[in-house]
Length: 197
Image 1 (tube, rainbow, N blue to C red):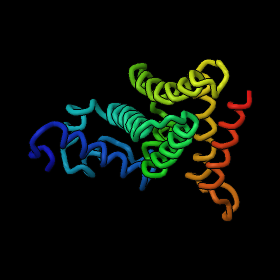
Image 2: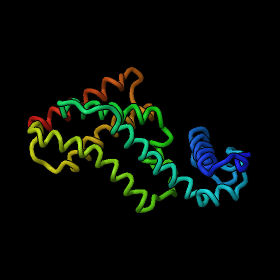
Image 3: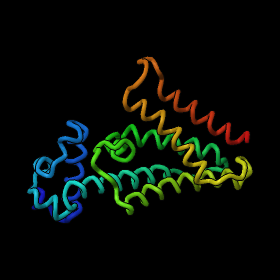
């Protein structure tokens, strides 16, 4: 029983892992407090006391997903080439999405239709976009990109990445599509277009 595990972090982690696994294996219908508790090996009361019920579990998954994505985008060292750094940032985005499909679905695809993140959770998502905007601003400051709103440009880059990844994750389209190559081409075209403006 995870109630016997020392520390609230272990219980929280077990509950989030249980919810993520249920969502991946059985879909949103499986996400009930009772099923999450059973999967985590705890009482339903622990789900309420640690995370405030099903909505709290979803909120925690949403926030943790964006925190993980922000960490991924920040990882690695910066170089003297801001465009190359943006390309690497895009690769980290793809790597995160492929390694964390359940989190990605909660964050971007309304995997649980009745879940609406709180304002605070949406601000965590917003700060993650700011990580990308900081890298765009470097390219603007270096004169590689024209003077535009860095956050707006970051949103355009993000939406391009998201479009390709959503198709890849859902296995949409012909089976012979090389999604990794397609992703790289989309990123390169977008970065080249920004540099040419």
